[in-house]
Image 1: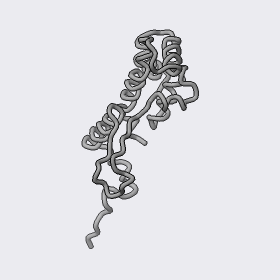
Image 2 (image 1 turned 90 degrees about the vertical axis):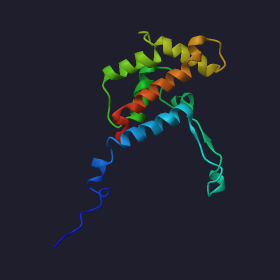
Image 3 (image 1 turned 120 degrees about the vertical axis):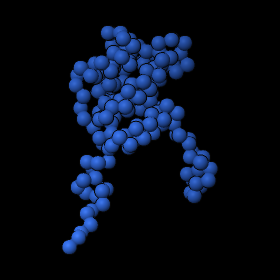
Image 4 (image 1 turned 45 degrees about the vertical axis):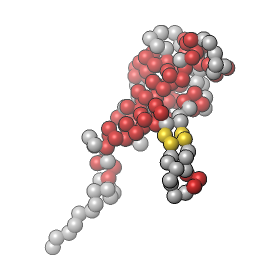
Length: 152
């Protein structure tokens, strides 16, 4: 007697096949788009309260909720915990910190000073502090491209 097999999206196999060469780029591009530009809802949605809404990620506000955002080690650790399903090594966290928060510098004070100046005055004329939102964006963009982001 012939029996139909369970649908591909049903337990227990669904979690093994939802990430493939078609879905990964689509999911990743969606996340990158939201981080870069945000998104808006159209005016013709069924529920009036859902119409014409605009969403933009405020990464400075987000990291402001982390344990110690002025400490680049803690910030990278908290960001990785938020974005990635699997832990990353100290080496990778250090590379992310140096590449994105310290811009190649080796002293953590580079980020700490810039972050504290920016948070105290987002209209600061300090050129390093003015880069804080962009540095956070680049960090989160890098984290969002990691395969571990898709494992949640």
